[in-house]
Length: 443
Image 1 (cartoon, rainbow, N blue to C red):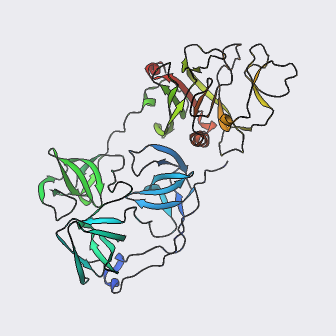
Image 2 (image 1 turned 60 degrees about the vertical axis):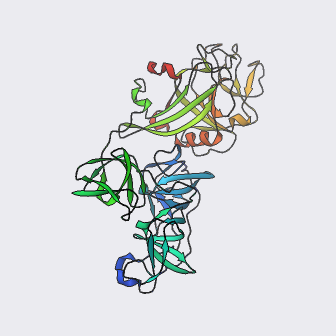
Image 3 (image 1 turned 90 degrees about the vertical axis):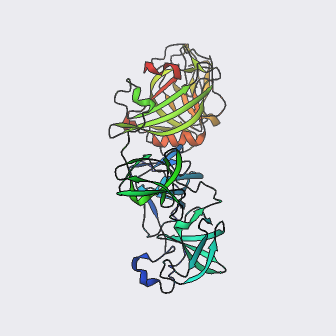
């Protein structure tokens, strides 16, 4: 069984940097990269998302002990190279062999205090070497505890992170809280401030046990809805509350039996060729969504009653058959067959080999068959439709590569097809359901 490999290990070569006189702060010594740092997945399966938060779409997944190529860190998320594109994984489920984290994505910060001392080390016990003023832009090199290391007039300085705010980043400077959006106050009384820092005015307070609606996180502050206006509270004094998981469309299905993996293909109506593809997996008895992608159906959409050559995709629930491709197995656990130039799928309704995979020459065994050695079949799998091989009911129904329309199959980008192939596991009895949204209650 092949594992999905996501890039190479992260290598960093900077030596540990210690500011003179830093030792008086004990364990708060700042470290840059030292030696080679390898990141590995610790969860059995970990979603890769398109952005740094659970509100971003899932673009794939990685599995336990996989090695990741980490680019940087944004809040509690690692930015990684994933199949040639940028992805994000939660840092809670990734572990490094080194002791340091990658640098935060944002390097430009803005001063929020009217005047802010710049010190020679990461602490108020260090001497002031100058000051910066409100609105001034800072070039942040790294973070050590609650202090930012900055470039200050050609030398190294440190400012308190409470009085600067990320600005001008390629990604959002604030990180949405993971999973739960409801938090509980743990302090007896907690000030709510007008901005993310103790220098901002208090606009009220909350008390122990009170529930807060958290919008996002900025540094060590949570942005909340407070009496109809925006407020900020220190994250040290609130705790995530258990919230009910959002109900998934798969939770309403009653025909999935012992399936633990499920692919759902939906369209707005019978006549559209555009489809939405979603994948789900049952973990600890609960369905979890794995992937969402855009896809296409037959040129004429879904079929009310599928017929050979009607350019429509069949609706219904089907098991998943052999995976195939014109190249080597990309890492699927399904039975895999590599396509050759002689491979065809028989679509001759009068042939005894109708709706089966065969090899040329025909030698009178069929009068028509579909060539398998084409780009659309670079990768894919067989949807087990018309297994009884009823003449004229339709043949060669696959899930394959394509972004325009098909002759009756379901298709999506090559990247998504490969991702789904790697995810599918025959031991989990995967099934696929294809249906207009209005008829999902049938299942």
